[in-house]
Amino acid sequence: MTPLLVFGVIAGYFVLLLIISHFTSQKADNTTFFTANRRSPWFLVAYGMVGASLSGVTFISVPGEVGNSNWTYLQFVMGNMVGYAVIAFVLIPLFYKLQLVSIYEYLRDRFGKNSYLAGASFFLISQTIGASFRLFLAAVVLQIAFFDAFGIPFFVTVLTTILLIWIYTFRGGIKTIVWTDTLQTTFLLAAVVISIIMIVDHMNLNFGEVTSLVSKSKMSTVFDWDWRSNRNFFKTFLAGIFITIAMNGLDQNVMQKNLTCKSKGDAQKNIFWFSIVFFFSTMLFLALGVLLYQYAIDQNISIPERTDDLYPLLALNYFGTFAGIVFLLGIIAAAFSSADSALTALTTSFCVDILDLSKRKSNQKKTRFLVHIGFSLLMFFVIIIFNALNDTSVVSAVFKVAGFTYGPLLGLFAFGLLTKRGVKDKWVPLVCILSPMLSFILDQNSASWFYGYKFGFEILLVNAAITCIGLAFLYKRQPGFL
Image (cartoon, rainbow, N blue to C red; front, side):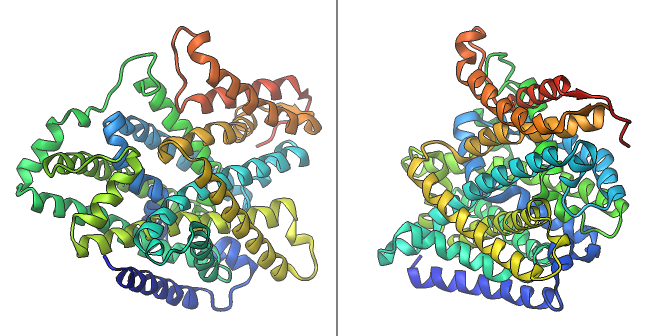
């Protein structure tokens, strides 16, 4: 692909986003930016959430990770399905009943202001890191496909990418994102389907042969029963449940979209249909992973040292121009669909939770505007730092980080929902800081302390449990809540 063609693809895609932004941001105010006036069609939200949930991590890392851990990632996704059921039947009714703009307002009503600020702060940290990791993937691909040809440094690539996202989200916010996500989901799924078609065509396989190749491959092994492995089924399945609850149900980024639906029932239908499509989409990405490795072997192509580089390498250099264009659209869509909603959610949480914007009598729109710029710059610096330090598969890095930063959030909400106890609110932030620290120490020493046992994604559960124990020690007599 020539740099000029890449530029044309990016420019054309961005024009489409601007057109959508123009129509969805007319007469937009802060309520539109934060909640889309609670008028979003549930089926539109459900379809758009597929692209946002898959993101650049799934798009690039999951197919590549098949070479390291086979299909064991599907164990995690099985747990995700249970987690989505909990979100639909427990959290959605609660949040709609309380009519929340930020879901962390629940913590203020349940425990107090310090707990509220602690929960919101951990979300801000978690989301900034997670969104930056995902956007990093897209920036790397754009750097290889376009910017390297002109000697443009990586930081300019990142800055340009974030600027484009900021331009089409700064007015309409979540209302614009609900609509742009549908476009981005379409491109993302189209990219993986066309990539599979191209591989099948190059290898002269029919549908039955492809199915047989994937199903019989050692890389398609789903279950790992070794209790010491960090991919053990029970550990991964349970982690899938609770990471979904934490990273979706207790994440302002995801729940902000659900809360734009017209009613609780619509939001529940959205979660149900989204989870089904998400499961089968993930299987499609895993199948693509097997085919990518098989194609590389058949064509005597050297497997990159970093598994995240396999899919971009083949799509941009071996599958032909059309497949390269579709791949580029897919990775841009994957990056934008997760980063744009993350940027909006960060702006919403900071304005509502930290600044308490509703109590300001003037300059609310200007304040929101400045916060939006501030988080854009923060994401830029996090990506630059990550680029200097990254030495592992991004899919593992994202969830590893989430295991530490989402743990206190899961613990706070679990303690609030499962008990009627009050807590000494002023000490809650300390518990939330100590929990990840203790979890990190356990994670680093588990093999030597626990006879070879290694924590995987389930470190989130340990983190949340430590938070709950800490909150129990802060007992304060209080009437039941809800």
